[in-house]
Image 1: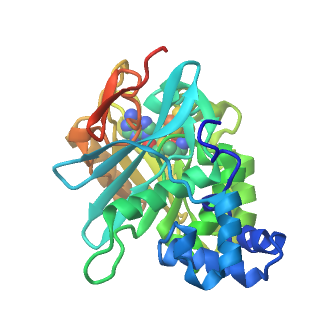
Image 2: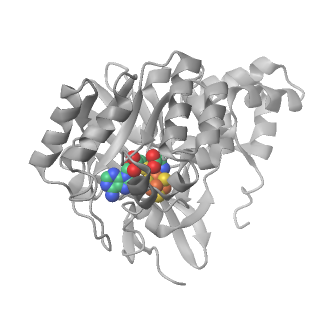
Length: 374
Ligand code: SAH
Ligand code: SF4
């Protein structure tokens, strides 16, 4: 409570229906809420004074009780391949500064923003540096949406008016389905035509397999689903993705096929991190093809991204190619994810993984201390 802004309502946390309710709560008509959305997301105006069709009194009232607050940038890195990574401050806990990461990956004809949903993660997958950090807290809806707002602002609009961000993936830090109540309104904001207006195929939620929440998601919203499978049998998956002990593969796949049925979805992407000698043997490719053959499933093979303290190694390129070709040969579409932003540690599972090792980072011209006991 140092700057008096903490009690204000951060409007980035309000889904479209909530924004209308917020306007009504102020004694206004619901369409004032829609106007607010347009100012925020279409015109990208965060300052109430600039919202000229809102009326002086309402603007003064808003300035009193609300604000539009983005996460604070700790650092911004641009990779040689154009990938950008932002380290964002997410408060303090146990005497440590907490940070999350957001990554922008430009490709031909599209730009993907990879956002975080939690500070750390409780699910403790053995190959993931976010998991190794443990769980700190859920991000608020405003912090999830704020990552997109901020990236949009930093990336700007192209001369032809097009926006840099065409796709959003919830593949940064954290398990999005473990923060369901804050992630759902954020995704509504990504899809709504008064807000970011992305099609449902361009918003992807990646989960390690929280089965009850997959059923809930099928009821609540229509977005693309990616599932972190990483192993084709329970014995191995129990070790790599511990949540499998609670929700084994058969149960998980049933939830996935239900998700597709409920939504007329196109297909589910199964992520499979390639770990040398652990889950990359030909026999496992055979088992994986057996599980997915005949379903609307795609496999995305992710070369493991090593991080300090991890014992795993990345599979050899020819082993990854064999795995991919075998699956394709069995009629299961498989691709290998290109690693991007290697020079700035922007790859999967590395997000904010270095925060605790790093003692100081650059903030503008200042150096600030991050990840050190106070
Ligand atoms: N918690 C969600 C989303 C965040 S992780 C999930 O697990 O799906 C996003 C993806 O990165 C997941 O498929 C995850 O398994 C993968 N991943 C985690 N650590 C990795 C690493 N070190 N190398 C490659 N991929 C990794
Ligand atoms: Fe959490 Fe996903 Fe990392 Fe597993 S892979 S620890 S679920 S962030």
